[in-house]
Image 1 (cartoon, rainbow, N blue to C red):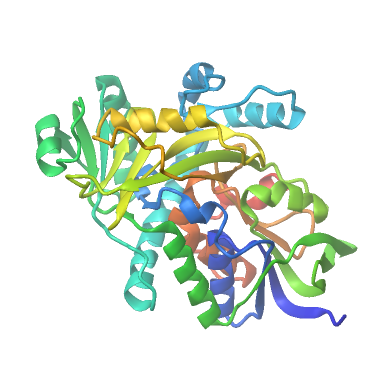
Image 2: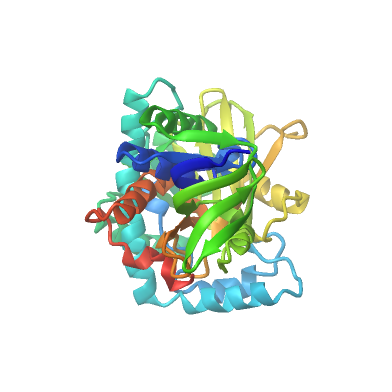
Length: 417
């Protein structure tokens, strides 16, 4: 079998891998994306669809230690760890708690905010110029609070985001009911972020895949990477189910599967899959005008033309894709505290996907210290869709020796591998 030859092999055809492929192809590189299933049908398929700089912070936040004590082992909490004997998980959690220092959080979050602001503009441009329509709407996000304590904590983060180009305003409880009639439950007010946007996630990844193809990238589906041939400090070739793939550079952008695929490349990637759920219910009456965040319950509501997507939870599970019905019921219950849903949602299909999480809650973008021609673009937790265009831009700039648009240091892949 003749070997496939390419300048860059991108492992993973999710939203981040496609963004990297497009930016590299635009710079004249021959790029081949290797996707084991179908392009875009992993975490990009059914996530919340939010393009919300207002909620783009490093996952490890100051003050989370106290909350984690209550949440981690509560099956109904927004952030849950199923009990199991797992040395990797124990080490990951210790690193995570250490990363909640304020200085680490603020530097990383500043970069994420800038990347998400840039990416939202990039998604808007793709919606204007691309042939496909993916429901992009910059209608703003209404983050609704049901307690004074929750609102006070959120104001600090909102002020931090405002310093990085994310404006906000406070709506009283009365203003919330007037401006967003879909909110019916008890609440004390909301932070409104007018520049936030939303989209249909699978439509967005399909549009990005088309853009990558137009730029010259080749997308190969149904291809599993089984290992790599190493030559000193470089990867000489990839061993795949379609044969040998020779590449000058390799990009690992496999999301929650980056840890297991990293092993095949001789790399120890500290990525842990965190499961989230979503469901789409029929249009409400009144249907939400904006994206709505049930803030204390960590539940996302995203209005589409034909329905309402309800999403939430962060369940540290590795690569386990089983459905935990108790977690799904907790998301539904959280949504019902604010909006009127049909009494019976029994016929609604539940989707689940895995978010790739690094211990410090920041993505890994850049060259691996293990191999001079191996690059990473993974670990985006819940910010993959939000920051994908900026991630592709940053990785391509680093690979091509250009001056980076964003500070690469907090995302430096070599901090772990």
